[in-house]
Image (cartoon, rainbow, N blue to C red; front, side, top):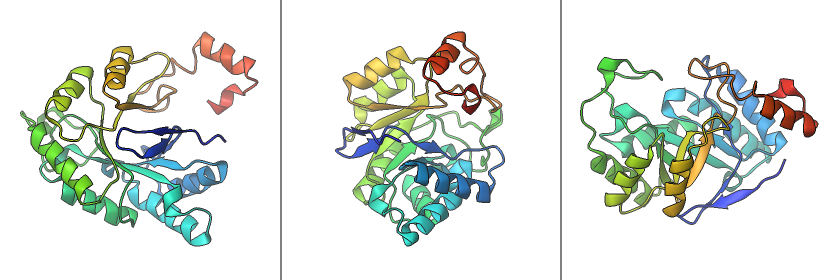
Length: 242
């Protein structure tokens, strides 16, 4: 497996391929097994979030691998995210994430969504009544910058931010976002967003590059596309691995 990396605007490098650890069932042993297998395959970038519930499993798997000598902490890149109910105190939220992971820092900390949720909202798909009417994002981003200043993370960024929201953030941010992680695949190329992020040196990271089949919000449009299937066949791959 190739280990290509990209240098971010904050000076650190990130592996271009990563393993996401979200699953509907969130089975701890299955997640740990997946991480161990991914490490053997050459993965060094692992993505988690408070709301995924996978931080402890990821942390355990990486700690076990470090103790075994398979990898060192500096060999892996760990991303986690600030959930919408924690916008009032990103520092405390990140400290809890670090406790869950059993780590002293994460490599990247992202604002999961550009929305603020009420304190009790601890499930991945909020209801309409869970949303706060106003999001004072200047205060949220100041808390993210404080996380960076305290050494709790090596970089900060956002997730699911539109072109408009990225522009608004850049208007006041002392530290620009290093990453904007969004859903992106051949059926949703995010052309305008990629252009704006490129102009401001914000790296665009894609999740669900195959369209998220099997998820409630996902689609099989990518894997069932005749064009994608033809590319797979030309490359000599098996369709079932998609």
